[in-house]
Length: 303
Ligand SMILES: Nc1ncnc2c1ncn2[C@@H]1O[C@H](COP(=O)(O)OP(=O)(O)OP(=O)(O)O)[C@@H](O)[C@H]1O
View 1 (cartoon, rainbow, N blue to C red):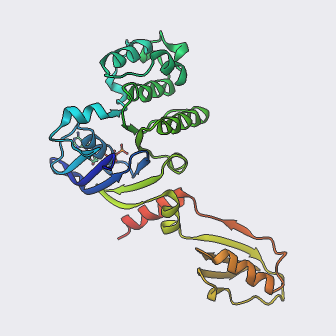
View 2: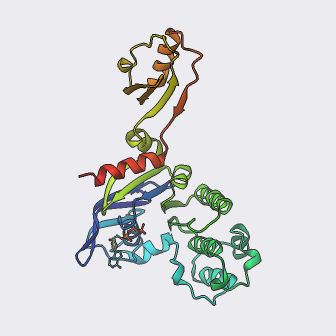
């Protein structure tokens, strides 16, 4: 079965600025895949080349096996994309926008149901320009889905939403995926990526520098889990540095800090029990996706 999206060696420059360089990306049908990366790393350019808004300098994009360059019309019917804020006129009403998009679609979703689902029913008669940032955002995401795309690109879909609204949008995106739509999500929010994405690709300066599930990224780049505990004066401490998975051990001021990965927690617990320290309170700090992301990018920019 063809993947929903297959990008092969995509390159795109704007004049002398290289926006995307030799980028490969594979998105299987039914997945939510996140594109992460700092400002200007090439995420939007990648997405825009993938759905045909921009022409790549070289490389290929296939959507469900169709070559996007050779068959732009067929590809356009399979993909949906979230418009930029500036793409809708301020005076268009929420209900009119949904109606317009539905009228253009081959097999549109139910308009009333869309308005209800995205919390827009009360604002059906409001002009786009009068909406708060959060409601604009909801409308733009809702419009991306009106034509029931099999693959949808959502670019910073929860920017400007309050915490509750973000969670509501996450639930809706999961529902969209359950309905069979594949999602490519551009985001700067690590909690969003962790919660929604099956896989992540991290871009830096137009190149893909890491890829994997959120857990793989955390395990690979997060720097390991840190366990800290106090040691009573006079207490003999076992040799922790030799335990499997332990990376570093630091003693200072009656406290020990052990950093490690993989199976080291079990080995550490066992060693402490054998040493009579089973009741010692352990402070365990596991790295988050944000920790991993920040470390990865620091490593990238390090000379
Ligand atoms: N239309 C354009 N003309 C000239 N340069 C552009 C254009 N669009 C993007 N760029 C440049 O291409 C590079 C990649 O930009 P892009 O918008 O793809 O990055 P991004 O990762 O989506 O950034 P952000 O997180 O800020 O949205 C940047 O250096 C940007 O300045």
